[in-house]
Image 1 (cartoon, helix red, strand yellow):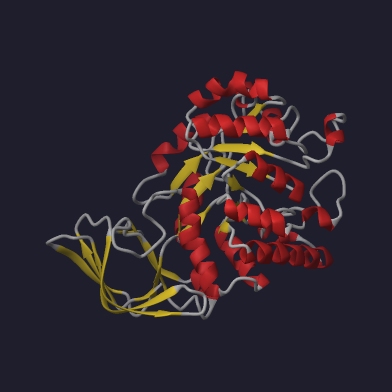
Image 2 (cartoon, one colour):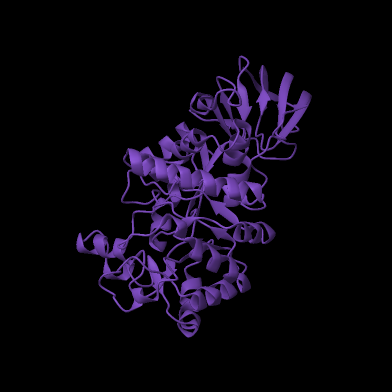
Length: 401
């Protein structure tokens, strides 16, 4: 983070160059940089503009690593405007209709809009999640039959079924692969298809086959999970990202479950660290619970977060909330008092951006990185609520409205 007095803009600036910074380390290892004179953007000859930031606090843009709301059935201009208003420049959609990408393409991945990656249809079992979502939209005649199997989802109950469908799936050009594990330890779900429609997912065997095919195609694999058993199976299968923390919706299933089914173990947390797995939070749903249930959910979320942090597991912020985004997620995490403000700022900026766009030079205020940043009115390390007080947004050297 930088405390800034002046920003110098250069014409067509794309990367960041800094001069005259004074640095100090805080207890969280996050380097807090106080800008003494100015931040230089790009190597150029002609100065385009000089902007007084009046002592604001400069941070990298925020990210949203799990949301499905960038799609044509939504009010896209409003959704994009809200993301930018909240300082969220990078978004990951881990399940969408492939044809929707063509529809939204003119509105995204632009200098004055959000940047977003799409998984296309996700992999599940026969009768598994998210088939119930497709059925609902088909029943309302908002989608056509072709938007079900081979569109919004792909079903495979065996390794051979994955192999048979893989070429057609790959032809739709996913940017990463989404898979679903739901209560994978409950074998009876496959014998009661009506009761558990939408509440089951892949077998571990099918998941492993998908991971093998995806990695051969140089695609990363994200896995939806519900329980710690699902978390464990995802680790064994070799996925690259787990898109939920266990128990993110403990009361959502057809059956009730003891809280222990959602408690992460030290062994699995350590295995996630060793394998470099990214775990996306998606915990803001707890804010909708009633008092007693909310307290139990908060306690579970805090315990699992502490365990992942203790083992230095890579985290990213995602909300999986169609009508919200990671601003609500970040504020909820702050309320748990598990992460320091400094650690949470770094998680929402650097770690989340890297999870969405591995290898892209974003998420840090460093030489050679994209000149994208936010200016906050106050210091978020002292008052995390200042992340909502954005006075200026700059994306790739351009000030956004």
